[in-house]
Image (tube, rainbow, N blue to C red; front, top):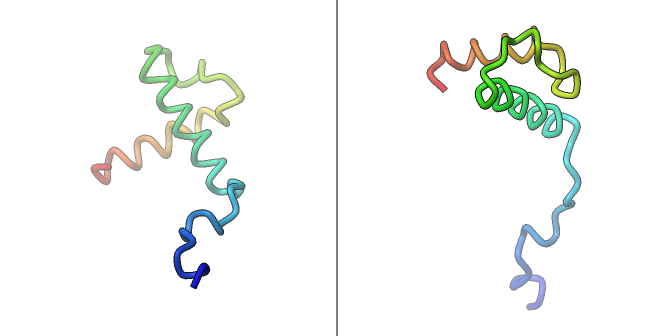
Length: 65
């Protein structure tokens, strides 16, 4: 009976997958650009290649996300 009352989230691992970490970094890069108003080429390296981040941003914008 105890297994039925245990929340599902409590049994899952709290580690981030590589894909989740990459997506989070990319979104943080987009937010950094929007917050600072800097050009894409000035995006710090910790957010990934500026070409990748800007490309994903423009693709999402085109899709209406």
